Image 1 (cartoon, rainbow, N blue to C red):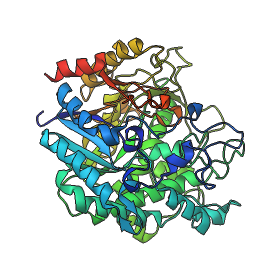
Image 2 (cartoon, protein in one colour):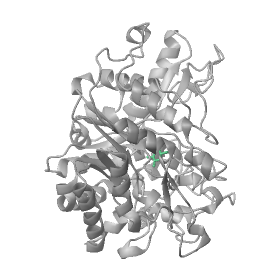
Image 3 (cartoon, rainbow, N blue to C red):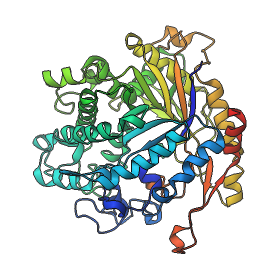
Image 4 (tube, rainbow, N blue to C red):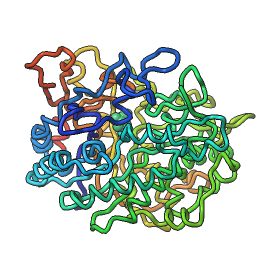
Length: 506
Ligand code: NOJ
């Protein structure tokens, strides 16, 4: 119901380029994708492979640092009500000083969006931790995990002090920019950073894991849980320090897991797989403690203990809004013998029925078309956190792939189908057989309240370790920057899916 809003989303490092403009300092991603920036963060793995596809980088991206007025125009052209963007921490804060040029840049961006009548959601950290913090963490051996491993290197999210540094940055941006911001999102997808930044294949910064052909440092039997804890402490400190009026939360990504059969064990496996994605973070905010399933399966010291102070800090550090990033689904089953921590086997093929969960996006290693997974996951969230009465904002949902020609990329019929089906199913779908309500995989019978929806992404952009090879935009961007041609402006062209949105929104 109104005031439901439709918007599109982007993130600073994926679109801005202009890495040295206005006093910006490097982030961990600058070093992760560009050779010889920091001994603390090589751009190549020990096996010599570059971290990013074809050694591409965020150096030019969509030139949005300069092209941002076009971004507002595009949003208006499509008829969106809202925009989700992120701030670059290292444009704004180079400790101990606030960089006024950085603040001024975002004031201009936000003023333009507000003058266009858009609702604005702002993410404070979309993975671009200051490089100087990562370097400092490595030198000071502040990692809590060091006492349990032979690894003496640290990393930002393993150090308890990161929570204070992040809260300090959050305090700067909320005190200077609150006026323009309707939803504050502290952290984007902590699960992704924990899952592929601190564990194999370590394809995202900081690129840590125990396999020394893939990672220079790290120990993934223990670090992911410490990183998760410190991320939520950072979020909670930022949340506690904020005294403005907009809702504040973090964007939690998760997939839907469909049990391969009606057996209770497979239902348990599917539920556990979701707990290890959502409960790992949200239970900390809901109860001030680890999800019981995780606490039971993962013994100390692999699972860090929480001090009495941490528990008080974490419990209730949310504004009752669940910011949901969702793209895809998998099958889940109870593993026959050895289990991983979550005691679930997962994959895209149901070995019982032979069904494939959904068609795969062209050239994608993970993204499958599974539109009923979105409402099911929303109902799972509503059921698990029923006591919190959460309202949901979909902060990311989208389809990305590789396309042989520009014409193929622009005539993106599959993406139109994706949006039509995911949005059409959102919050509506009720499992007809009632199986889920009876099994361990509990879904809410009540329709969750969805406040708004953001498509990922407004623009084709820098897709992290996939570089520019994966296009997620509803707008095509000509990646001509590498030509080093002064007339090249990373030209933007609406795709069929952009026109589809314009029609629907009308
Ligand atoms: C999640 C991330 O937040 C975003 O940065 C990324 O581009 C999309 N998913 C697509 O993989």
